[in-house]
Image 1: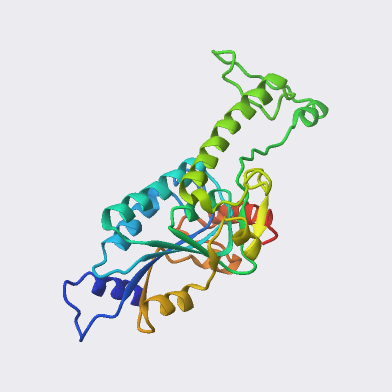
Image 2 (image 1 turned 135 degrees about the vertical axis):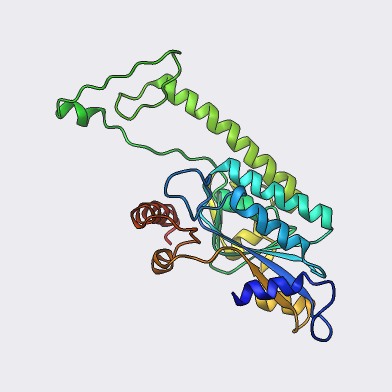
Length: 288
């Protein structure tokens, strides 16, 4: 409530008490990136949930910049692209610089979000990169055969089924999946090149587009980030000690606070448990 009151005051055309200090809205982008319509994904990052906070961040009168606090292991490439594009649209319209501060991880789609900033700052132990595409699943054909279960699948269109987990893997299905992954990977690479440009240091030799991950100073060395910096200290150094940070975003629910996960809009406890476990598995890929 206190943060909401601060944000409301920032919208006033004149400061309520004395002169207004420098303002920097802070968008917290924490969690797995996924479409909000997916089951048990109430706490996911997606354009539907972030469109409002993004607009508010760039509409605050007197803002000197917009800061992004990024902490995401990735997720949907489409939602990553949509969120980053919306941030850039507002930044260009309002002529405001955007600074990203990476916390634990900005990997895969999380790094895509970070590229929406004009400058990326990290901690010594931050994990960045993983510029690639991954698809994982299970093959249960042998199991259901042992259990005496018969899989029945009927389609119209010979390519309607793709990598059915209850049927043996087919080489033609794998080839189709790899073709899709290559297209998405190319879009990701194009976005990174467009946003980071000449800052990237020998991408091929350093394996920037292989899915490799980089930590802290190494990420700076290869051009995935611009330097080291903590959000409060950095913004105070740039805009003065009286700079006021205005946090924007949704509060986390009790369960997700206990598990150390991102914000959640609500939902049944069972759904939150399943979603939290699935999200925890994604974080675990980076040892977090």
